Amino acid sequence: MLGAAIGDVVGSRFEFANYRATDFALFTDKSGFTDDTVCTVAVAEWALGGCRGDLAVMLQRWCQRYPQVSGSYGARFGAWLWSASPEPYQSWGNGAAMRVSAVGWLFDSLTDTLNAAHDSAAVTHNHPEGIKGAQAVAAAIFWARSGESKSFIRQNITDFFDYDLSQSCGQIRPHYQFDESCQGTVPQALTAFLESEGFEDAVRLAVSLGGDSDTVAAIAGSVAEAYYRALPKQMVLETLRRLPDEMIDILARVPA
Image (cartoon, rainbow, N blue to C red; front, top):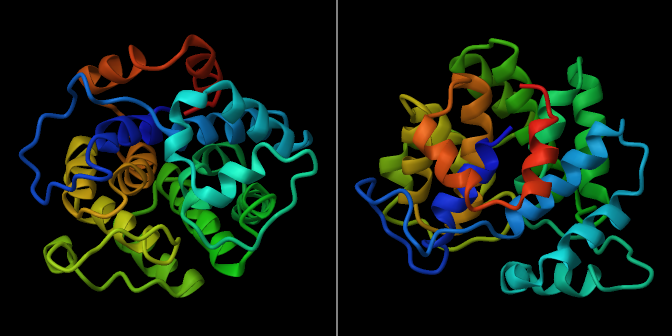
């Protein structure tokens, strides 16, 4: 389950230096994992345990273990992760959606997927938009791995979550700005996936939109992996060599 991590690593160097085209080098010495991957691993560990552990504790433990990415944590989440009594803070930020991908892989029904996605978001992002963003990404992954078509995924994301997926990447790109909300990130990331012709293309399209590039690409990559299944070998190798072994161990345990 590396789709989200690959998108995060590829998009990392563009987060604050957007590049609005697809003809970029996928990996350089400036490419590395961010909070998106750290939080994805925490949720994966929680979901692998049947969602029975304390996700707040797991998120704090994983994030505190990697202070070198502390600059990529949002201000409110950054305060939350050091709190002795962490409580949700009504966030609608895209952190709920960027970390949820394991949930989309680990449950056998849409209902269970949506319930787990809700719980994965609610420890921090308990605003309805934060929960909706996490559920939409998890549902898209669930449908993609279940063999549903892109037209099915597009229609059901629109029907279930009321996201507008009518614009193309070409229409989004010229006007899209940095947006840390779920409602300003999830539809764009899903559009990149829906318009793509393969996993690499999905990640390139996501980065090319601009905005919060690592998160847009992490979300697009997570859904694209479930749909296309085969990941480009070189993208996998380049990402793995940038991830700590303990992260790789958790991600490898999620059945894909």
